[in-house]
Amino acid sequence: MAATAVAGPAAAAHDDDLGSAIEAIMHKPGYEHAQWGVLEIDAASGKVIHSRFANQFFIPGSTTKLVTISSAWHTLGPDHRFTTPVMATGSRNGSTLNGNLALVAQGDLTMGGRTKPDGSVDYTDIDHTEASLPGASLTPENPLAGLNQIARQVHDSGITRVNGNVIVDPRLFTPPALDPQPTPMIINDNLIDLLTTPTSPGQPAKLFWRPQVAPYQVTSTVRTVAAGGATNNQVSASPDGTRIALSGTIAAGSEPLLKVSPVQDPNAFGRTALIEALARAGVTVSADPTGPNPQEALPASYAGDPQVAAYVSPPYSQYAKLILKVSHNLGANLALCNMAVARGSGDCFDAFGIEHAFLTDVAHVDPTQFQLADGRGGVASDRATPIGLDQILAYWLRTPDAEAFRLSLPILGVDGSNGISCTTDCPAKGKVFAKPGTVLGLDRLNQQIEVGAQEEAGYLQTDSGRLHLFYIGVTGASSPDLTSFIGIFDDVNQISALLQEQASAAEHHHPGAAPPHGGRPTR
Image (tube, rainbow, N blue to C red; front, side, top):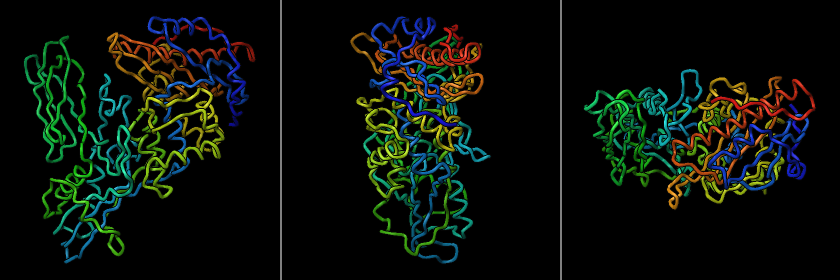
């Protein structure tokens, strides 16, 4: 489908009536001091349908991922797979390796920990990386699956004993000063999952935690209280992260509650996890399985050393889908490193030069429409204009991967971050494909939640199948607490649903006429 490039001045000058239903949402309590931005464009004709402050900078939040992942998709290619090899250094004596096994980390985001039997990457609408949000849940796959595959391959290569060590080689890139920090070796998003399930009132709650790797230990004093009682769990950990404690209460009859604790040393964690996987596969290692990763023992190169195992990831398009669907912050920051490595650099910040060239020379997007300092949209100074984001979306419609990219975005009322809105009695369900962005903080002065930004950018699909590019966002809103903030999230989704209904009604009843106002959809 051809798409006309978004014209900056034309888009900035346009200011249509949004209709009474949308205006009512924008003037609800909590938006008294807020500014809304809107841009909607018919992708085929380039006609601007709605525009408010489209050429102004907004805090992008996770809509930044549209820029990062678009660049990474182009740089790496949708079919790129990460191959993480294990090299055997030293000498073989029958089934014994007198030397070391080195797992050469390649910046693989999941290492098989989310791969389904069909080869796709699994996710839940509210990911474990967002465990602070209500409803966060786990995928059923084993986070250690990739390491288990590697261990079986080592055994199948004929090695059953290692007189030496197992070492994670993390020299692919230098972990950048970003939050969350991407590392060459990642298992389970560098997190320990802690799932608490209520039992009977007065009894200890049930704890499930993963991945269970030495020397990590988890203790829980969480108790079950009566139905309707308080559910409030706290997590604490030792300085090295290996001793984790859960405390608090959970109400009987409530859904399981997910918390996480960070893995402080991904290399040491990965090393021990691999040694334990080798033991399960029938390969013994003489070295102590716990302790620091002995990176200093790595060779300068592996010239002449045999590869005895390798884990091959799903295609990068699956990782891009995961990152966009659940707003995977670690994956978005890691994408910078993946791009830098693909161009021969170990400095993840070199990716910004790659992004700039992609925007300028490939997507034909004005890079000054953005101010970015990470991959996820978590830096306070980050900015983006609605025009810039719509230009990225327009670029995709000129590529052979247009549909694959659109279906990688959260789908309103169906899946991903927007799966919780527009679920019933909503004509726009399944017809809005958009990346949301959220920036929250604590207003200590007024003891409330400050909403730096809530927005989304993506595609509206009319009932006839026509695509519109759109951005809708608000900055400067407020909310009494995190639970009531979900109402602001829903408001933005409701506006996108109304825009979809308006666009469909306009083409069905009055082609070329102004969109009708329409009614408010139900969540």
